Length: 409
Image 1 (cartoon, helix red, strand yellow):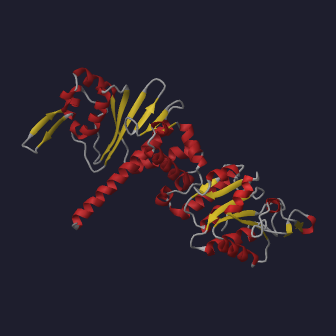
Image 2 (cartoon, one colour):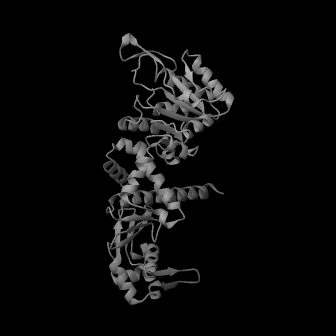
Image 3 (cartoon, one colour):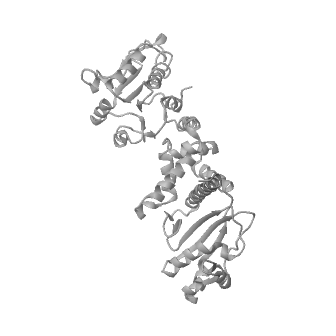
């Protein structure tokens, strides 16, 4: 492959990716602007279908920043696709949402003559040939379609992207920084999830459900977060958002589930920080110690516990190496208060540490936590059952990032 050919393909791929993201941003805006009783079908008759109680609208989205609008033939392909759907009985209004470059704009509607011009093609494969594609449709169909079609000149990529984020901030009552760091990527991820679902009924959503979904997935770290903001900004934004929502208050029973892959040191560091910085001497007596749940082998878990003990603080593991005792694990630490006041002077332990297996046993026996911060996909249903508040799911964050999320420095 020549350098020129590769560069051309790279530009083409970049344009395609921007085209998909432009469509997803448009979908976010259509969902947020829809009436409360309107369902939005992603990838339905067109890219976005607005299914109203009395009227439905099909929206096709095109991002052609490298092209200039010249004549109605510039929009031949999308217009003919919509005309075909209309001719087959689709009782929809149709919108072509299109952005052309070079400050060129198509008309908002097409006359019957402009529609005929749009559907006229010239090919040169076997000599110059003129194709009158409009002849495939009756005059009645062509006239009816012109009454249903509206062409909307879309903003450029950056302007529409900014508009989508501002809409999210307004509807979520969130800061634009929180939208940048958290909600926008979650919205993109959910739109993509809907678009890829093979079941048409599962590709439908309304505004209220969409907003609830984004809020419920406020702590889910996805590849969209990695691509849009990165782990550092995401962790900082998530910590800020959880603090605003008062999800991780000191008086709440909290558990965090981590997996030990290659870096045991990070897991040990997190355990020590939870034990030393988040509980113990100097904290209010109403503070609850953290529970650290480790998905790892016995030796890895033992080394994490040993690292905490070397800091001179006690742990509670419910005697899991002998025979896990849920009652012992559930018992609060015995504390002495400084001068009989409200501040802890001494505590019998400063952190609970258990394996994933013991955690499952603990929850299945009916115990729970105020909130659980857990890896998505490890055992989601168990975490939902054991968390009084909706659990906070994450994916791909290191133990270092987890400490930032819970408010560590």
